[in-house]
Image (cartoon, rainbow over all chains, first blue to last red; front, side, top):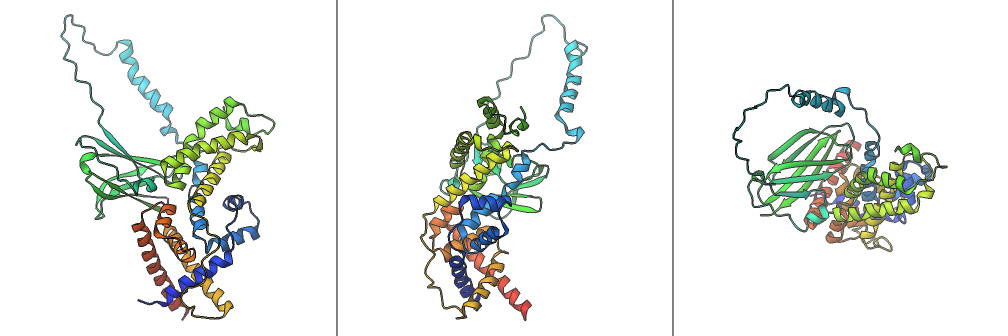
Length: 222
Length: 177
């Protein structure tokens, strides 16, 4: 192993940290992120970030979500995907039944079939895989019922109108489940998985799209 | 109700108007906080805090898109929270690093510049871990809490970061010859 780059790395990081000075104020970072700061101030912040892990990470996380602001804007939806058409179609299909045009069983004294037992709500485990601080310390327990559902949710800096491919990988990298072509206006994604697909262990939720790839490791316990 | 209602500074936003804006933007603000903090509980708290600040400072809103304004407040709240989550260091570590390969300050800055450009090619999590560990001397535990990951992952980020740094560095050296 070549030690020379490591020596350069450690020495240079401390040089950069010293040269970068004190952390800029939140307002200065805000101006930098919004592109409203002067060229000189932006350069000072870039010089500071070069040696400061705190500001580097903070800016990385803050910058990542800039797309969410666009997400709150109104987006153009193709005419054939507008909800109003779905409602109109549903109304067209339901209308004949409402008018009694559809065949109806009018026999008197007909015995009704026994009512089906009300479908019980399947127990579900909700796992926020983006909540890494909480997950790192306590792995959520899988429900015992084999028919139950595990709902994974995550928030990431997704762009509205872009489709993303989600995949759940086990510790060996095998794809346990995938959901291609999902979109989100708010940056929030959810994947419902049957409990039977999962066992206690470490998994990764991989999200790909818009030339970006995110990995969210999470652990489940029995 | 439209965001444009708040576009005119002359229009004083009413409580009803603010309630509607809260309803519309709550999810976006909460998601911003969740992404930045990696902690749902803290994100809920900061999202509430964001709207409390927005309500208190609504007179400072200069018009424009309300959601952008409130998301900026959320971002600032998260930046403050993240910074406060690491105990403040008065000054960077004294330079007790292994002897540099050069003793000239100009050369030292030149090497630092090269290191900086290599670091920029590393994944953000590895880069941040390297800086926090080597430049500031934070422990694995402190870095893990800040980045929102386990100590094991911090160690892995440091190891992989160094490995990747070496690879890019050597690639650059070869290219320069």
